[in-house]
Length: 211
Image (tube, rainbow, N blue to C red; front, top):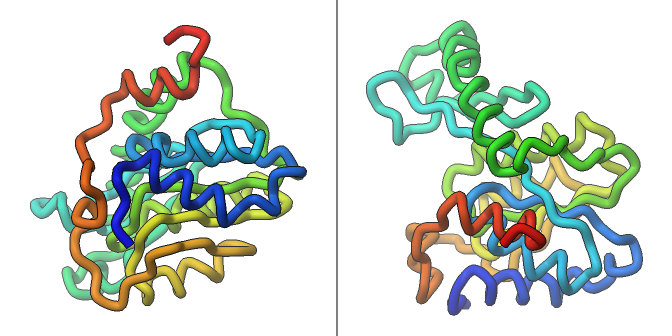
């Protein structure tokens, strides 16, 4: 399945999540592209839209390779295979996380225009991104949401590697993915339009009254 753009992917996810419409779900998009997908989901289900701040932790000297990831609320997750192959330890992960959290906090505060995050305790929460590659940031997002008291946690992803999706499903009550791939190309290859998303676009979705 190929999507026209991120909003098209969001509409496809919303169609598969219609059973949650009566629960006024909180829809959390991973910045930046995941927020564009999350927008139509929140609209269709009568839900509330917010972000879940995440940041990949790159291997020192090789930033594109994920050592792990962090998420707001203090969540840190490791990529054990990378730690092992690069002969790195927990101290390396903790050091990278400590350096990354201040920038994550600044980014989240800017996108939310300084308002606090929507409380998650007891809420039906849907975590949305535009696709998954290694799954590090998604795993961090799920752990962060669960730790802050979500009652029912759904992961909704347009396209993802089937093995990574299976691994992530243990961290959510339900997983929805219309396009699980045994062989995964780059996420952008499954969209006709996968242009970069700016902070301004994210803020316009989160704060339509200021757009």
